[in-house]
Amino acid sequence: MKKTWWQKVWASRTVWGFVGGALAWVLSNGVESLTNLRKLPSEVQSTYHMFQSWYYDDALWTGTWSSREEGHINDYEQAEMPLKLSLDTQRGKVSGAIFNRAVCDSNPMFSLVFVEGDIVGGKLVANASAYIGGKLHFLYSFSAIHSDKEPVITLSPLRDPHGFVPPGARLVRRIQVTSQNVEGMPPMQEVEHHDLQCAESPFEYLQRLRREGVLKGVEELGVGRKPKNAAK
Image (cartoon, rainbow, N blue to C red; front, side, top):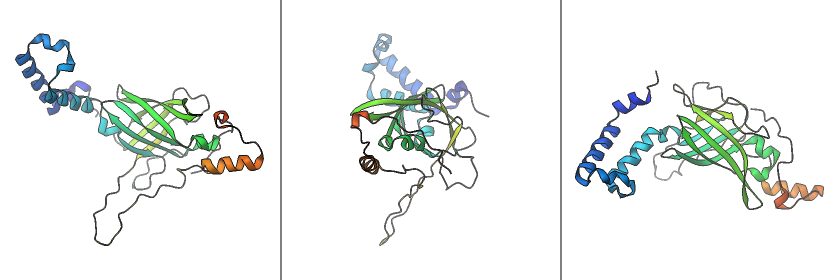
C-alpha cells in the first residue's frame, strides 16, 4: 500500500533532520532571518536540497527507461512502439532525452529529442523538443506515472499534434550493467537494442533526399512523412 505524503514525512529521518537543523538555525539567527532563504547556512541549505530530492523521489525517476528491456525475468507488457527515455532528476526538475521511433520514422533529423519537465504530484509532466534550423522547437508533451509494484513508468500524451506518443506506453527501468575490473579483460559495454535507433541516420536521410532530387534546406526540414508502425 502506497504511503500518503504525511506518512512519509512522519517516518523520514531526512525530514526530522531538516526540521531540527532549521529550528537550530532560527533559534541562533532570529525569526526575522526566515524572510530571506538565500541566507541559509550551507549545512541547512544542503539538508533542504536533500529534503527536496526525497520529496520529489529524484532517485525513483532518474535512469533509463525503454520498451526494449530484456534483462528482466517478468513480462512487464512493454510498449510495442520503440521508446527510450533517459532522465536526470534534481529536486523535482527533470531533464534528459527521448528516443521515439515514430519521430525518427517521420524525420531522421529529429533522432535527438530533448526532454524538460517537472515532477508534479508524483507524476512527470514534460515537453519534448528538437532543434530545427538551429532553434529548439516543441514537438509534443507527455505525462508519466510510476508503478508502485513494478519497475515501470507509463507514458500518456498531453499535447501531441502528430500522434507520436501511444497512450498507455509502458517503459521498463534499465538494469545498470556493472562489471568488476578483471586484469586483461575489456570492460563490459551495454549493447543497445536495434529497435532503439532510426532506420536511417541523418546523413543517410540527406543523401537519399539528394538522390531523389527533393533535398530541402535545413530550416525547412519539418515533420514531413507519416510515422510508420514499428514492429516489436
